[in-house]
Image (cartoon, rainbow over all chains, first blue to last red; front, side, top):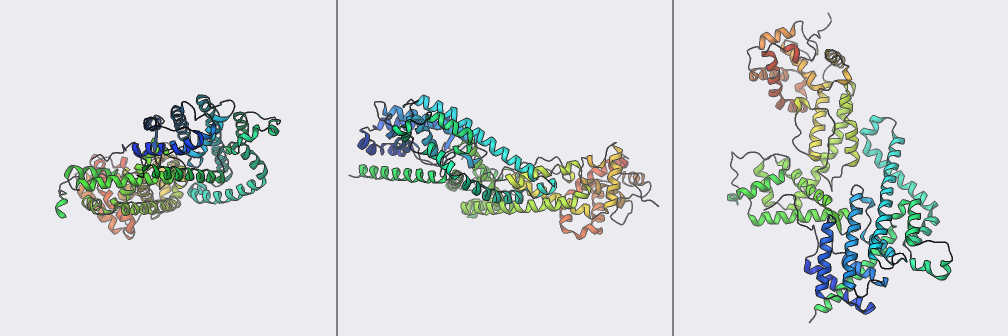
Length: 280
Length: 327
């Protein structure tokens, strides 16, 4: 019996058959709205691609498969449901895990800055549908890597700098500061929360405006009345916003909750569809 | 049930570091725990690591990095180490692994870890206060690692990850037997006992002894790299073996020669017995913590003193052989 730290390839996750089943369960929604569906072989191919992509990115699965959610997320794009439906899903899955691996690697020491799966899917989707990508998966990944990873590094640097500055400001009696570092940090965290709340209130209009731009319905930007405004592509706009405020990279809690509800609803719909198909 | 515990009395004790893994390997090799139970334990550990991972991502990510996943596993094993080590017996620990609910053991381990963490912090704070009057650069160097320990230690997801970066050795250069927060607890508690020991001696005399010791090496007392309690104890044993009856750093005149002559043909064991006797008659005997800390270290200290005394080099092992009370 092997009790070494060499663990199985997944900490908690689905069996290959379950993964395939969950992917196939998206067929009903995909066919009803977009007239596409996956065969068993295609679903198997996509699940296998996902497993390989996870492993290649140096990741270990701890939850369910992201693929059904990715399918539902990208279906409205208009680029996914074409002749290469299965191939597109497989390539998007690879892109997702590659970016997930890169981001998770750099934020390993700062779990509070871990972008959620939903946030990552949303970013990728917005790149994917933007006119500069128009469904080009390679370009989508290139833009995401070019913008999100440096932004995350800047955000990490900024957090580290802020912490250093706080430490420096607090450094009076170095012995007391070291001996009671935990209590001082606790106190500082409490006052930082208050300070953050003040800043948040002050900055509310600006922040909500920018957040709407980044996470809102991007298609609206291309309506006639908006097109008159001097705006760039999503990539340019995001780059500009993140260079001013790297913390905008992290979506708000409300946005996360909204995405979580949406993902849960999809999962329920797919599960119901799966049950109906299994029924005699 | 008892037939499943064939732990041979001659079995080598399992090292405290990676204790649970050692236990499981022994159990698997000797058949001390049935295979089905070992499989159940493996699954329970896997489940606990998965729960750690889920708690870490807060459900926001369906993946973690390989390094994080390994850390979750190590944390789970460390929780079991923390639950099983206090049993102080390999066979009792094997019994617990065989019979107890693993989730209860993990919970106990987590409680032990949190308690050890708080106790370790309190111990070092007190140790620092007690040692500060005599502190050296090396002792002061413990402050930054301690601040890190206070603020960056993660008892849930990286329970085993504690690095004691300081270069200040313990009395008799004791190794730290276990890693992680239990190791930190051992180290800081040892420093506390050493701090209490220093406080039992007249501070002025310790300063004089340290100055004389530093002067031998053409340096200043604050750059002394040795363990302070060890210097104090060597000096005091030198004085006490020559007849001093108080806790003093002052030696009678010609103490080095006296020690060389008296103990030239002594064995380490007989010297240890005398040191034991002196210790039990000294005011230090009133502090049970100090006594239980020093007892296991006496044979090693005696052996070192004996090596120098028998070679006629008492002046080398005594930190300040020429330090005598002024008339």
